[in-house]
Image (cartoon, rainbow over all chains, first blue to last red; front, side, top):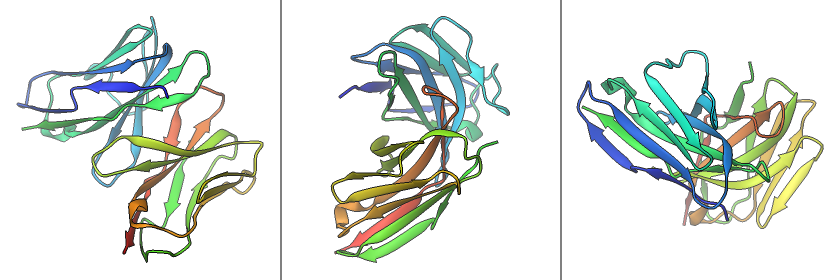
Length: 115
Length: 113
């Protein structure tokens, strides 16, 4: 089946630094990728929808200048958490939509801990 | 704004029991509904997907139903096993194919042997 990878799987950083998370579709082209955030014992909350070659659409309440999303190719989207703070510590999951079948596949997630 | 609610939040059952997980959504204008499984600290595994025109889907010991007009779905697990222990998430796709999934908070299931 289709595979979506995320890198890194875990990251610990100091407060104030920036962290980049990569999401790749390994065997299909993804014109659309979605970024979700999940706090402990909470559901996945949609942060933004990114379309290849265009600006991401952010959900209400998500700061676009803090969570920079780049979707430069049909197989790669990146989420950069800028000037990270402890409250940004969370589980970030990406999802990629297959260009052909429109099926949505999820990555394994990236756990971010900001000290 | 679409909201998805799952009841109960947690459930503990002995091995072998049949059980039902509930999901409700506020906006019946959905494209499809999907049930996922999430193991601790892991990503999502898709279990069943029901299109808005369908009433139910089955896969092995799992059966999911959809009543779009009332905004409800259930996931039935037959003959539960310890390996079924996980968090089960219900998600609805708003609007058209390819749009984002909106998730409920999940039901954490524990099956004891």
